[in-house]
Image 1 (cartoon, rainbow, N blue to C red):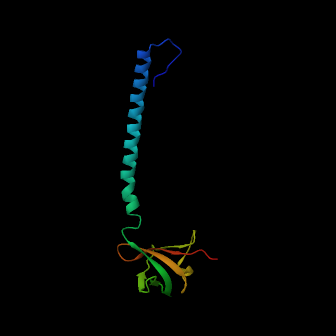
Image 2 (image 1 turned 180 degrees about the vertical axis):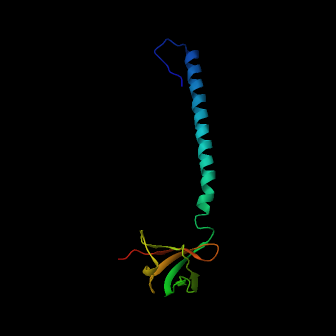
Image 3 (image 1 turned 180 degrees about the horizontal axis):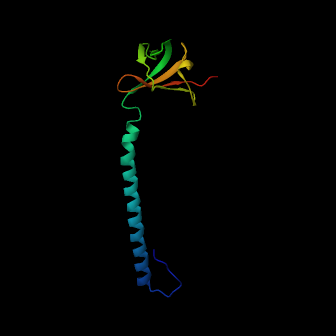
Length: 126
């Protein structure tokens, strides 16, 4: 960067130094904008695929079986969702397990493109 010391500068010299500094600053901000854009371009697909292209079901658990969870959705339709070994369980903010599933509990089930449960979220106990 340019450093200005106590010197007797003419108005023209001072204008040149300020103009040169503005160009340097402009180049730096342009680079930062390009870097931010590149980061967003890289992160967007990761964010977009967070649920593996699936969808969520919200409702009340009406039946729990070893390999299937049946949810009565908020629109009144019951839907059976296959559970797999890779399905994760959450109770509030804590890790949960299959045994935390109980008939009558509210739940949000994240379903992958293959129609199987990726994760089951239950509310924290009161």
